[in-house]
Length: 104
Image (cartoon, rainbow, N blue to C red):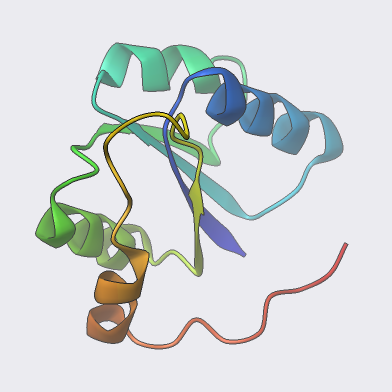
């Protein structure tokens, strides 16, 4: 599975560490408004991790990144108090269905 993680703060960084530790997922794409923070979140994770600058308010950019990285799922790791909401329900019809989510 290929996962786009939107937000590289506390939650996103914890996701990256957990994924690396347990060798989960084929590809993890860490995206944040601050690309340096995304890079720090995936540091030491290896080649299956990638960092991008992404404005989570930009539906087109999210869709393009999902397509470019062939992501199967999007994890919203933004601060819940942030005024930004990831427009996943708008993006998914553009990129196609992602299929069932595997259980771990």
